[in-house]
Length: 293
Ligand SMILES: Nc1nc2c(ncn2[C@@H]2O[C@H](COP(=O)(O)OP(=O)(O)OP(=O)(O)O)[C@@H](O)[C@H]2O)c(=O)[nH]1
Ligand SMILES: [Mg+2]
Image (cartoon, rainbow, N blue to C red; front, side, top):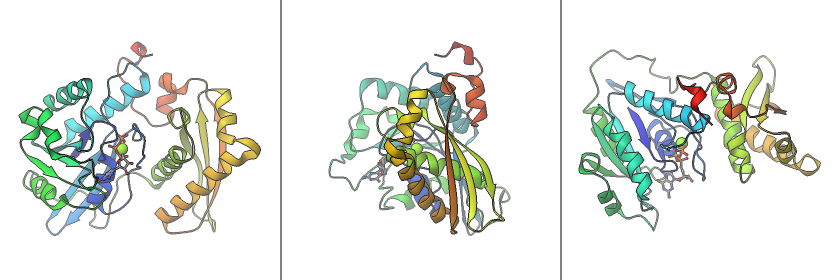
């Protein structure tokens, strides 16, 4: 099953709610998720692979095109799709167009999750802006409270192919631990910094020493410009210290053990606009990458 939708609609929060673990990073600002994140939910007799994707946007920028490659590829691979709509916001015309185009390309059975039902601005009738092909089978959900999740899961169960379990019953994720560490540092970057910084930083885990107590992790934050390095470090190192502390807390909670986290800031001029930059950080490289800005 794949979760698709516009940025900031709550796809990642919903994935976490469906898996019952904080696997995919969540942020108050749009474009938090940059690549697909898979979670596994195993019930008696049923195993679901649930895939979170970057929010749909139309942009010529290379990283944004990479994110859309991921969303399209994940959607193509899935047996069932859930389109997630933010029930607290009215769709702008261009957003409606992007979402409709994306959903038109889906070949799998699809249902709509109208999310954020717990918010006082929620209005389920906002779904009526969508074409009936997307809006007809709709489920009112709150990813925060977990309401409406059962009806969504019923829909998914009803459309899964028969087959053996692909993963052991106690597995909840497919990616290696390093991936989640990298993402938790990124989530902390979104929490600590404002303006463009969260969109300019990618994270590479350089050392991961499980044989040490506490577990030793060294990670590099790559920024796009020299001036951003100073912004990340902050006055008297306050920025990077706050980041280190926020990220360590998250990683310790995720791994259930004590962690020593070393963070480094490096400059890679324009990494987001560079195929090698995307590849280094594990992001999809669009086929015609040279056409990007
Ligand atoms: N009130 C309310 N807020 C929610 C709910 N689900 C998600 N949010 C909030 O919506 C914001 C975006 O959530 P994400 O899960 O990061 O959204 P996303 O669709 O994955 O966003 P991108 O990765 O940027 O595409 C966060 O501030 C969440 O806390 C919900 O059920 N209720
Ligand atoms: Mg997300």
